[in-house]
Length: 211
Image (cartoon, rainbow, N blue to C red; front, top):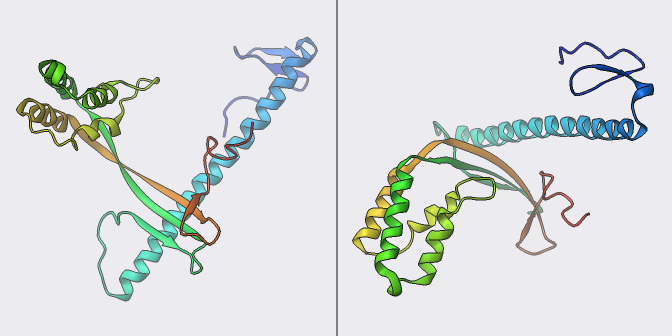
């Protein structure tokens, strides 16, 4: 609950917290205030419902797994891992997946320098595809975020050069797993096929074809 005192009738509060008589507020400002407030309140309600849905889904999945464990007298300890559950008719599928939260230490800078040295030494003999992969891996996103997937992809390249292997070692040493995030995804089967479409639970995906 908010600790802010109620706003007296006939007044509106500006960003500085001052009370302004409604008669002195432009109609456009009033309209904008009304629209944004309604959308914000609905968004808060949807967010709370999503939190409740995720909590219920995780508990239901956990209970379902425990029932199976009890049936076979199996003791399940720790995190249960990823799992996919499907309805009897195969129309819906629910997945619980864990993803590690990875951060990179200062050793990432050393790895970047070692990869750059490899590319410089290889010069004209360097594979342009490899050069592009390295460049893309160390180029941060527009928001300044490190592209974890691109960096880890460098470790899968089959290159036996000693300097490259040293660079990969530095990259591995820079990886710091800080925890994990659990996701619940719900899918619906497409017709009678064996393919499923994700039921969107985020604003970016919901109604993607709408303006």
